[in-house]
Image: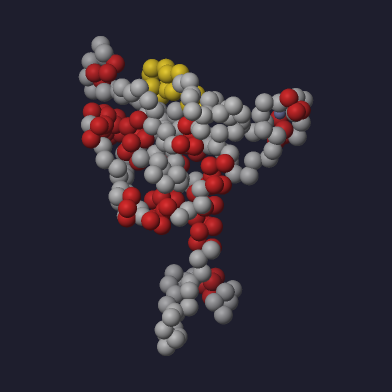
Length: 243
Ligand SMILES: [Zn+2]
Ligand SMILES: [Zn+2]
Ligand SMILES: [Zn+2]
């Protein structure tokens, strides 16, 4: 609970914390059940980004799914237009790092705790006026990304830590997943990286797939015979990759 000196504490809502009846979630986290039961607990955890207390929602997105909960507050979610649980962009269903690679507009969130408290407080006061940080119509490219791979596993039970170590005594009755995880799944320490759009292994994989599948096309005009290449290092010349 990092917010200090921004008003009397007699009433929680007067100090600028959020008031919400429903979380901001992407459709994957919400699941496809027609009815879901959500529990709501007021201010019992702090937001993983701004560290202010927020309303935590918990629910089960499907019969075989694990319980999920919101991890960041609504202000932080709205500012970046991301899901409160998985922190993927709400419009495109992609990690922030993938989205921001193509975005011209950037949303900067102060990282210094004092500035961040003040900033979060101001933002929460105007939460209803926060607009989408970008114009979605400007980015048809982001609509084209393959989302299947990233969405598939997000609601499954967690990977069994005993199985990963090589021995789970519960066998088929184990409620956790018996498989070796391919990419580090969402953990406490990489939540922040995912939010700020850096060092996100899932984003790296998606971007690599995108750039690898896009070799330069030969020009239509056959008279064009030279190719401009920049950013060369001694290594790339030495390895003869360009020959
Ligand atoms: Zn927050
Ligand atoms: Zn989500
Ligand atoms: Zn197990």
